[in-house]
Image 1 (spheres, rainbow, N blue to C red):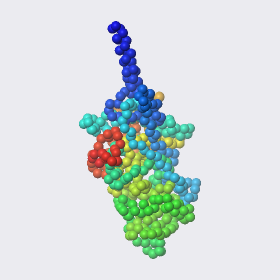
Image 2: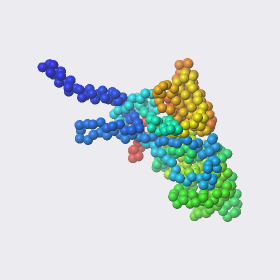
Image 3: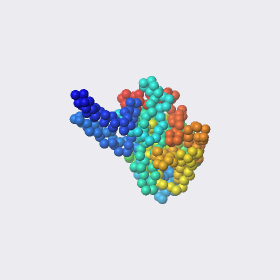
Image 4: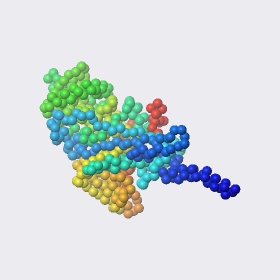
Length: 459
């Protein structure tokens, strides 16, 4: 009888032991409110005896940004006049955009990873009063985005603010919807100061002296700008603009037009860019129209911003996964720490390769745009290539002979420096006070995107 009871107990416990073994193989139970690992394809749904089977969450595809061409007017001097078509007949196709997805709620299981990602919340205090827990993120499988002649890598977010913090700040300045990321770098404007200004006309549409005050770069959120951009940011106006681009093609000539309540001027500079000046009352400002977007140059910060849904936005040409919203004296970052970006580029033999002193890492700077990629030299590699930054002027590794961890330092063409750990994670992301709308402490990441009807505390 005792043997029978033991056998019966073993049979009863076998399903539970099997389930526990399955769970351990999948990386163990997630007791830290961790976010799910992201994969390129959804895991197959498990079968349950319950009436309805529980479905696996849909895989979140990363935004893919094409880096094959440099930004227009960047350090590789890719201006419209250097393109096969005439300067006045620049492409007017539908602009490229890619949607970042908010991080999904925590799930029960995560996949074990062969590498240790950066802990975005080190030193922060979570909602339960303890130290923020390490979260197991999974970078996208870049092999799914490679093809013969095309290289792919994971992009790095340099300003890893929590979703609630960013969205709260943006709502305070009236943002109702964030734009998608530009997914083709050739559609960026990134000209130097010399090519970011024009000589202003001296005579107006009536051939009389032109008078007016140029609007300050620190006041492009003023009503005069918002109202004027709202007038022209529609299909009818875009069709009109495209028509003018086709018929008004003489460089260094000011084409004047008048509408109800304002005058406007069309000008083509020697490099082929189309400029549009808006003269409303006693104030005026100038914009560019490029790849079906309106652009404006912030001379104070040396940045070209594009107009979208009532606001000016800046997508960092050196860190293509970083998006900011202009707010007069500041730029507010809008990207989430856990949204993923993949970059693709044509394989280019023109590269500069720098090895770390310990031989474990390699940084390649590729092409005219000087895109820097981090590689693991192990065979097989323990992680996929990581995109660090563009415009990398030089690469330097720290000395690990003193027992300190390996660090990577990039000097960029704009004079700034980026520092990364040995896995390509940036140090001190988002630490620049100038990126914040005010000095409030950002709240810890709860793991769930905030509800629009129930905004997070402290925002």
